Length: 423
Image (cartoon, rainbow, N blue to C red; front, side, top):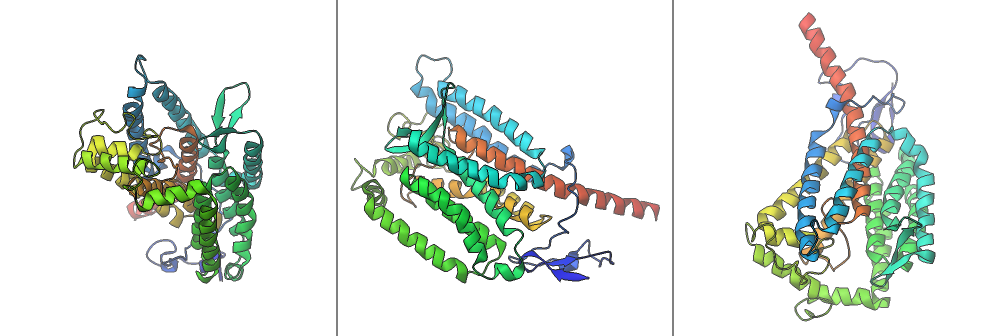
């Protein structure tokens, strides 16, 4: 017996013969639709051999290159120190990130589903606390300091992750008929607007727009018709244009993006210096550690513009390695999503992939002059614990999903091989 499942996919209920070509091969569909195994199927235990190398490899390449580049960019700022303090802190955060990824790998997906709403509520509360008692830097109040510890963090990174998790949880139970209306859009807005409001008051316009884009991608992945996304997208663009006209700093960044050479001593300074770094690097770079732009010419070289330092010191070859690793990560994450066992797993896998991929795309576009300057770190590479820890959490969840999918497949292949041997 068959019935229509999430996103128009065909589900099989009860026992029945399998067709030739592997389990469910005749039922696989292309496009936005996806074949799901029954949601009630027990989650397979994580096996060490089942860890997805196609996901781990690009992540490890990016993290390793990030450690090297953070040392290269911060060493000139630490004359007289055996090791640059920024580099030491980055190593510590990297070790914590590995621990978080390992712990997330052990957490079953249904636990994240139960915790999605409390985690989202806690992150929204932290955003409002930041507005009231946060630390200000560069004209924005985005940092929340932990009492008696001396450490500060940006709640927005946790808020983006929790919002994707709770939106995936809200969309997963919806039927195919509900997905063809406004109900999923309303459900997404309920959890997105309370996060955007404090971000706009901090102000953190860039992260607000990235969150809107992430939720829009999640809705698209869920399979709602494009026509229901047009109106929210148009409203977002109009709101962004209105915000830019009201905020002088945002308007200045747009001017610097449109004509950076004219404003090279002002709002276009960062972009011009990034162009210089790319130009000096040529094909193979000037050599690791020999870059000049990081020497007080390129602001935020170890965070927002670390890809410019890669371009200068490792050349076009180094930039292509970074972009290729992110492309491989996106492919691996998308493949994990397509093999998901149920709608929530699919949306979670796609959301975690987009959480890493979209900021990387925006950061690369900024340093190459394809988008207005915005303070986005490059995931896995840039100095900054908030982004790295949340990315590690996303990787751990993706590895859990990949492992739980690979284990039943390995058992099926082993059983088939045993039958062939017996035959």
